[in-house]
Image (cartoon, rainbow, N blue to C red; front, side, top):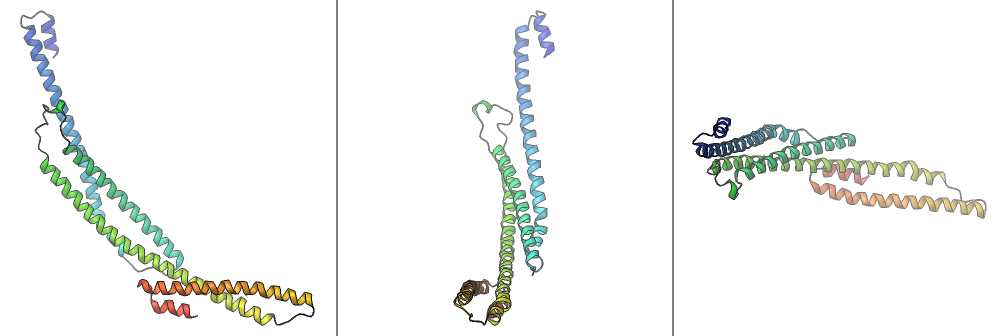
Length: 250
């Protein structure tokens, strides 16, 4: 281009023609450079998409195993920790899937983007990306299929973990009721046998008895609620009904 400028400035007899050729060359070069940039952008987006998709797909088997392996903890603290880890795993899988999905959509948007009037003459205007679109869609659908399968497996174990935690809470609550009856209820009745030597003492004993009776009634109400919870737990299918009813019958 600098040669054309020097020729025109030197008063070359074909300066007008030189300017036209120079302008045409400049336009074609800009068009070519734009096409190169567009191609580079598409390839970069494709590389990122396929990298994340392959990372997701390569992790599916391990995630499935983590979602379903092993028995359920029996201690409440271990169960709470297992539930926390299970939720963390879900968030990791969801984040990985979201990134693949978003990158796939962005790539498809570029490949399927309609040409604006100003770009109808560009070098990439006639590019046919239909095959590339189908390839990207195939990967997106494969990732989606595995994500749904993972979510189903994850959800099943989540329910089992929470039901087992409910069983632990139930057993703990039952034990608290039994402990109160054995250590406080029966002991109170055995210890307090007097009827009072005076009106003041009799009323004091009556007040203490009324307070105790209120606590006993609350304990009975809690026990009644535990029996309802036992019935619900037994119907979940995850907890052993005999184990539940055995605890409830105490």
